[in-house]
Every structure is written in structure tokens, then in C-alpha cells.
Length: 65
Image (cartoon, rainbow, N blue to C red; front, side, top):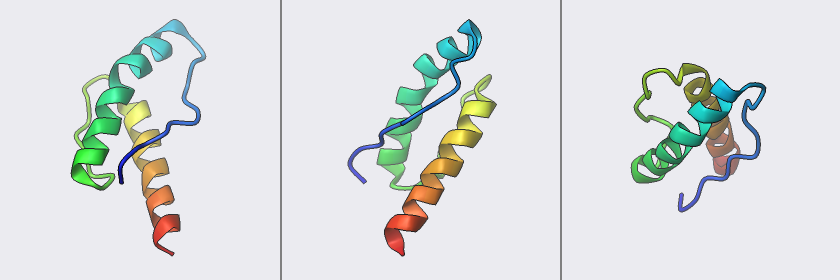
């Protein structure tokens, strides 16, 4: 894995926008470094973490099949 594109994420309010702007770059880099969806949760970003890791794992599963 050399890149992770996030196609959509929650933007319904300012808090969600702020959290996603802060943590998505971290989650993307951790996934690339780990070469998996097994990454660390950033405190306060559980919803983003769950969506990101779940979607990434689904994409990885599809790529491998």
C-alpha cells in the first residue's frame, strides 16, 4: 500500500470537519506505515476511526480477492 484516498467522510458539522481534518492524515500515514488497517485510535475520533479502518479493511479484502 503506497497511498490511501479517503473518498468521503462526515462533514455535517464543524466539530466533525475539525476532527477529520486533524486525524485523517494521521490515520492515512499510520495505515501506510503498518501496511494494514491495524492502527492506533486517536482520542476523540472514534467515529472516524471506525469508518476509516472498516472501509480500509474492506478495500484490502477486495484487493486480495
